[in-house]
Amino acid sequence: MKSIKELYRIGTGPSSSHTMAPRRAAEQFLARHPEAAAFRVTLYGSLAATGRGHMTDRAIIDTLLPTAPVDIVWQAREFLPFHPNGMRFQALDTAGTPTDTWTVYSIGGGELAEEGVPPRQAEEIYEMNTLDEILAWCRRTGRTYWEYVEECESDDIWDYLAEIWQAMRESVERGLDHEGVLPGPLHLTRRAATYHVRASGYKQSLQSRGLVFAYALAVAEENASGGRIVTAPTCGSSGVVPAVLYHLQKSRGFSDARIYRALATAGLFGNVVKHNASISGAEVGCQGEVGVACAMAAAAANQLFGGSPSQIEYAAEMGLEHHLGMTCDPVCGLVQIPCIERNAYAAARALDANLYSAFTDGGHRVSFDRVVEVMKQTGHDLPSIYKETGEGGLAREYDPDK
Image 1 (cartoon, helix red, strand yellow):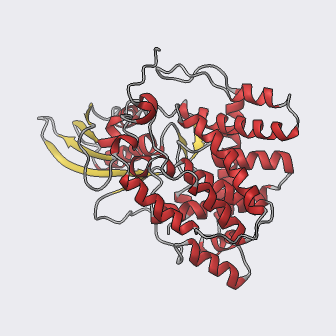
Image 2 (cartoon, helix red, strand yellow):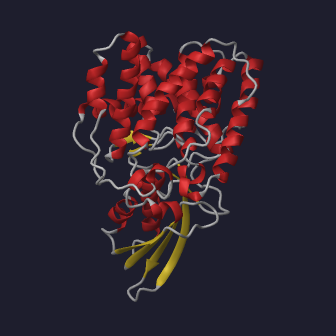
Image 3 (cartoon, one colour):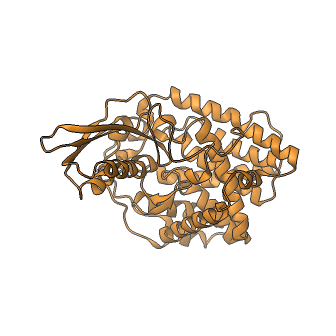
């Protein structure tokens, strides 16, 4: 597996697959062809189907247009074989003749890949790639997940996670401070600030749940408005992990150092899914985004409360298992309905998974690795209309004016 630095990326919303990765691809292609007289970029499959709502065209045009004119071609009905999120960049001469063509794919979490070409930007640094292997290592050595991360990562990993936590905290706090309506035809009102105020009027048990909702909504709304967030594991699911950790630090007084370790553990679980299955909504549906985020947050919370490696694995397994089959059906192609609400609900479910696991000894029948395997197969079995194309489910024939 690669570094968890490849999983946690600071960037701007609303989508790691549709916004962050296309911008990175455009930057790389521009660096190769600063002399181009014009550019043509063809978007395929899911990337084209919901690209306008995700501002894919703006991300590419803003990058390339200062150098030369840009023509965006939308091919929503054509899916390239390697991945549903395909892009084809062409540099054109003054006669409009292509001088170079590059096909690249957005595979989730802001990462790019080329068919048959290993990703050049990151080396494999984790020798063990499954939770079964890592859990056995924990039992054998008496150590836990964050210590395995520390052993595999470079010396600056804690400084990196400190930067990640700072960005996460800021996204929560900015979201709580912002009010008004989110961009796009849905005219969706921001709710984080209202939830935060209302939560203070409840008794402690309900107040706790209301605050978690508010924190997750805050980040998800920042993402939907194109704000600065951290992929955890994606932009569309970026509210879950920050909400849980922000709430636990505020309510329980956990130190920053312990939060960093919880982030390391969460990143390890997310990494296992990314390596063995997918975190791309276009490939496996929302189970790979919000479901994985819930698993990451559940693992992090259980570790903070002193869970054993087995209990942490069980919490994460529940977080993912009970999102199996979740479709990715963004209304109007925007990361708003049902995405924002799902972040809040998944954050609460992560805390429930932590609590459930804490009442056990960590023993259970279905392993995290097995759930990851099932998630991958389920994602492949889902029809394409339920994988970020905006053609099925809640997105089907939705009229924002009614």
